[in-house]
Length: 197
Image (tube, rainbow, N blue to C red; front, side, top):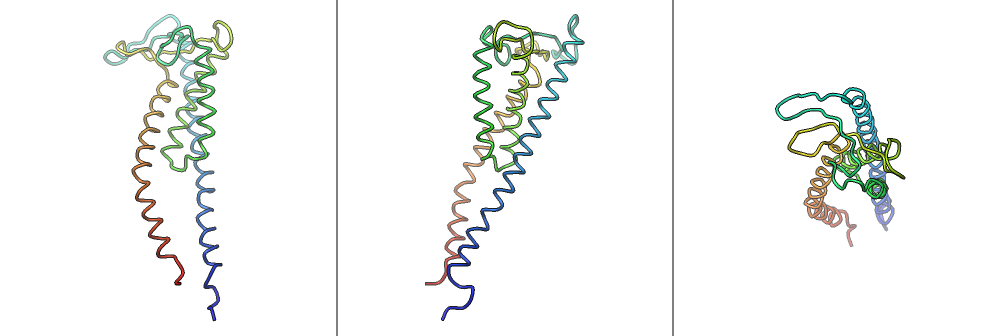
């Protein structure tokens, strides 16, 4: 005679238990991702507004070679690929869509933070392409104003995209390094949790 509670029901309840945390964690990560994207977008647009109002007819020297100088960029990030703004914008739209779709797999804070940085930066520059003066569809100029004098002029959105891409790369490397340990831990738990035969 089997004791009450032994057998298949505990296995079913054990298999149901791990399913709940990912859903909760997934919601929390979405909030982080979208929150970071919103902060980047607001900071980017505010600094661009300030740059167009303040730097239209002057430059501001800060520290060393760092200065603030207004440049309208019709290429990609860091003023590369001039005149191909529409093509770059369409590519950026695809990247944003892919990143938002992959956001559901961003179960770790670092990944969600990184995706938020890239998405916020990409949308910030896309708004410039769509609504600022320029040639044709999505051909508007992106406002750049941070000038190191030894690097192409850039903005907050460009910085967020680059930092986000680096953090995402490092987060992926770390996740891959952690996978074997997670697999070993799962295998050990499975062996320990097996009902006696």
